[in-house]
Image (tube, rainbow, N blue to C red; front, side):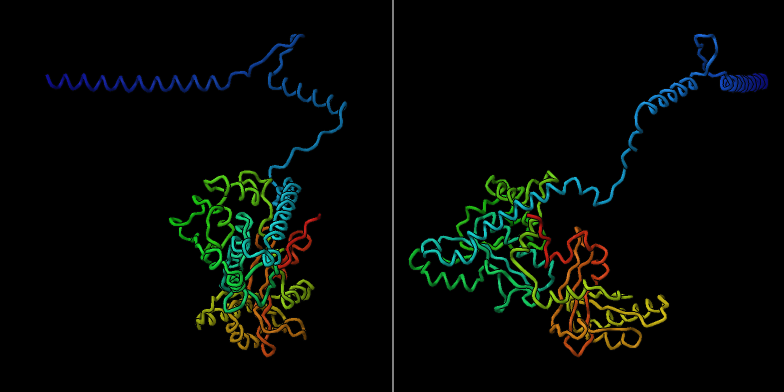
Length: 434
């Protein structure tokens, strides 16, 4: 009995497999027959059979022929890609217009709130006047100058005068740049405050309110109405880039937001982005004689260096760093395979490093003095080579007459962008046409 049941099961399974195979074969056959069917045809007026895709192609060719014979050739389609310069051309005129507008705002502000006029105010008006201070160390030119420029922008937004903080009676980077006489020093403000008797006669103490931008939980950049603060001096601390001043574009108080928008433009529009910091720098600082001579020397041309070593030591005296730099120089020299000794330029923010490494590289490299006979003085040559975006930012070091000079490595950069962009923009901001 069990044997008969098992035979019946095996036969049913066999027939099921046969049916599946037959169904698969028939489906495969139908698909193959369908794929070799003749294409769709259409009947013309004269009874001829034409392929529909071919008919459409012929019609397009005929239309193109008649249109080309009747009209001049059309322009080629626009490119899908563009260079940075091409993308910026559409905004060039409007940005220049906005920059001129900001320039007039800055000039008008410092003509009213500049030191020459404020010094001559009567005691009552002087004691009611407000100031913004910008203090900087010499840790790095870019970061530290933004502290001063942000204070200048804030003085415009708050309608106050600008104080540039000194360290031991010296301006920040005073060896390299000259400051305009439209700003105060804190020492002078203290002297005038005592001279006019602001405390005795008007009860106004010379106090300073500090807002630290580097502490987001405590800063009032977004939520405070700085125009109503009564303190005589305001210090916006820790603004090492352009962001600190532009935070006021998002301030919740309309007065602060409008003042920031008037200066920086509308953040949502690319056409309202003037060169605020460039205009502030052009009116506040200028290059010293030594730096100006160094810049002219670099732009005068000459043989370009074969190797440039940039050592940002941050006043570090590490021996291993000097050894590693010397090893890299030797490797680069051997890889160049020059017939003569390579010309090496050393750039560093630490003068002692240049002094120590120059004797070690003189055996296999060539070096010269800065200015070829012109005594540039003993200074750390602060040079920048800046296009619309930074091409390079370097600290050159000049050790006195007994040592080999260390020049900035902006030579090739300046040649690359000469005539196209602002070169050494920190010291020579581009003068826009009036």
